[in-house]
Image (cartoon, helix red, strand yellow):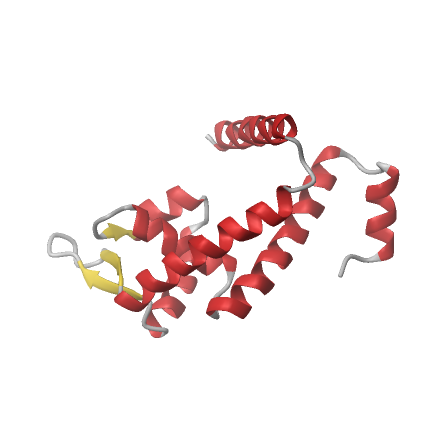
Length: 155
């Protein structure tokens, strides 16, 4: 649940836009994690990794997934090890470079990714019901601008 202090700040319009965005991100993460965990037993972050691997349609290395989801390799590697242990992802050593692994989803991983996609669509519909079509378009535009700005500043 959202604390009274945070709720009051949001309702009064206090705080800078970045702070508001961070609070919203935290709330959305908590909301989606709870729903996805209850339905398929993994976190939103793990589902994001499964979906990224699935969208590549072929074996893919960790660096490519890291770039695709904007996570550092260390935290991604830890998450991938858990997904491998859970039987959702298979790691295969590269024939060209023994240090590199390629990732594919197992049948169980594909099934969780597909179910997760459905859950995400339902959650998305639930969350945007209070927004008009114009507001949704504006929100997408603003979020894309912010993402691009951050990506460009990272170098």
